[in-house]
Image (cartoon, rainbow over all chains, first blue to last red; front, side):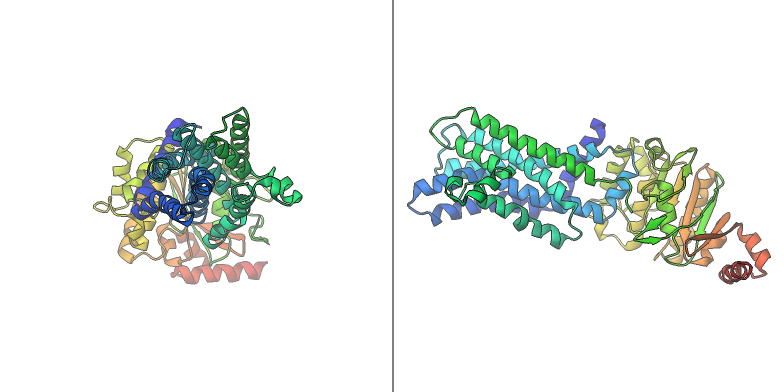
Length: 245
Length: 228
């Protein structure tokens, strides 16, 4: 692995996105607009908006980075650029770290925008600071990136890759406790939710936006998110083959 | 060698001379790409050994010495020509002066800041070729580099290939158009995953008694089938 190649890869991915200004606008504007929408859906029910909207600020980057990464990596596979890179002196880790660098920076931009809109403009409450929510958002974005990278290996077309969003992400969103407390679900679903990465991502955000006070459980959640992300990256690296049939 | 569930190559043994242009010729689907992929080390090889420049094909050390251009241009369509080349230059570890040099070599001067995806097919193919020239590879494997190019451009590219060979590089160029065979120092004739013959264009003409290399190739197939 070489810092030169990692950095070059990160810059290249950012350069690709810079050539697509509409994507940048969508990345920043869409989550903010959805948050505004949510605010007026729950008009006059501030407690509900706080309960759902505040953690959602930290979940948007997860969903978006999952999608973007799986499409970008799929393109890299189908256009032959991945094969070219594999014949070059580039370590797989250079590629993965380069992607993490680029999408991490993008996630920071998105998290800042969403948090400003949510906490400063729409009056959501961040009892332990909006910066904590923003930091969790970036960590979740990297988790989304790692998962997106991994599942992209199982998509042959962009149509399939897009379907992985409802297939992989939506069930996790339903089971993570955002809409219904996990204790209130069917016991089987509660059990399943323990195995899903988004459960820990949400739990950390719920604690970070709950005035009841922080405890060590947040650290445990963050470690779980990091563990899932690293495991997905390792599995993703296995799907990057130098030799193919 | 198995690709796509079929045995594609059987008992292929070949050696290519240093500093020459060798043409790999044969009909579509005869195994040219699979052979080239094995040489650059991206093909899972079911049996046998592929040794390139004294090392196992695809080994880490070879990645700095071998250049590979796939049939479909493998460059980033959403980046400009120089952005593509600058990225690949940093990956292979050469300075930015090489970017200008390869742009010149493939005749893309004036197109540097154009988005690669908006170029014509032939121009895109040349960006792909330029990316493989950045690190001045000792062995350059080119899969149908002249497909879809106009005759003028094709002649230019062949001049470029010979120029590279004169400077010591070894080129393996595949084509399914027999009239390009005349441009090569040496020919590898392939059919149905087997190597039919290895000879110079002159030797092929002489042995088959055909001046037209396309006819000569057909005659060579007949002769091979007649004797086998």
